[in-house]
Picture 1 (cartoon, one colour):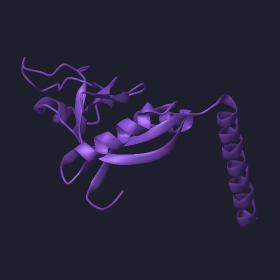
Picture 2 (tube, one colour; picture 1 turned 60 degrees about the vertical axis):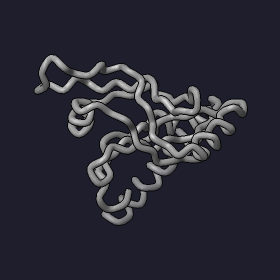
Picture 3 (cartoon, helix red, strand yellow; picture 1 turned 90 degrees about the vertical axis):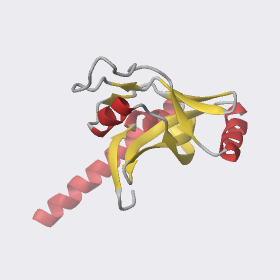
Picture 4 (spheres, rainbow, N blue to C red; picture 1 turned 30 degrees about the horizontal axis):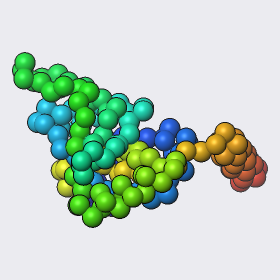
Length: 154
């Protein structure tokens, strides 16, 4: 992340279950109390995804908890949120998602110069053997780090 950005949440599960082909930064249209909840990191998005409907990109499955200090005029926590992209970017994403196996998954949520941004990934689902290979690679890397630390301490 560049300077002036603050990471709010990362979707680590998406990086494990999907291979990310491309990613794009986009804004998100929020109501007032949603922004406050976002800044307090009161969000949950385990199975969030984005879909393109009538030339607009919408995030579904994103839960933003109600802001504790607001009045009765609070937001609906599970409403679909609109993503802000240029028309040509939406068309490019739409062409890609029409290909077999591609989907749009939110990877990161962060603040950039006081505005909430989403890093939207164009992802393709991994097979079971790909996931096992990732786990094995992670374990080997961890063992190498452990051995390296032992040799330095000795």
